[in-house]
Image (cartoon, rainbow, N blue to C red; front, side):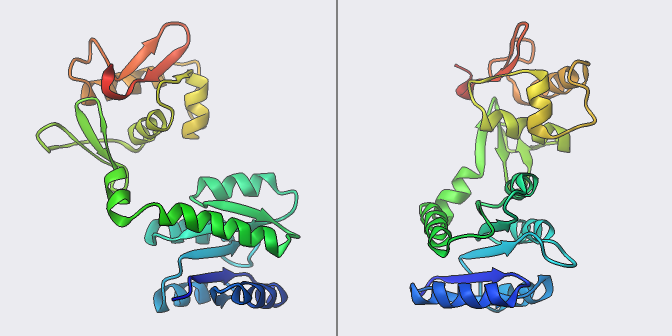
Length: 234
């Protein structure tokens, strides 16, 4: 069965070109000119990957990418303007797997489609589910539901800020992260990098995840530099 792709672009010429080109290389291609049509196609038959233009009228591509990522386990490639670095970064931040800039060579786009599909095929539902639950300190964190559980399986209350910090530490194991770096990675611009707010949140996290918060083994202080997450607390 051909792999199904969904192209979302308000330019009929681009839709027609991509449909013809990708179909000629063995893909089943569905087309949508905007958010409403995209939702219809997603419900009609789930694609493996969505090619999503950022510069859509009405609901823009970033809004739609966030909608797709929150509800569907599919690949997303954003199509951006040639020099719109901010758009590319924003697209990746909302969960896109890759991006391609206009004007693009269809061969490059197909290569990116193949690359994203290979990465997705390497993650079976069972492996994805297992990867969503990670051990941190004496607890387990479900990355999908954002729930923290203690060793007995009881839920430990976790604020949005605390989850972002835990996620950041998990993504940067064994790396010293300064307060300023934590501020950037968690994208919490209301924090002041040199005040005590991050220190207070780290202290609260340690009380939740460490066996001995006074002698933390997982979230360690690196004096004069910041904090470091050590998997397994070794």
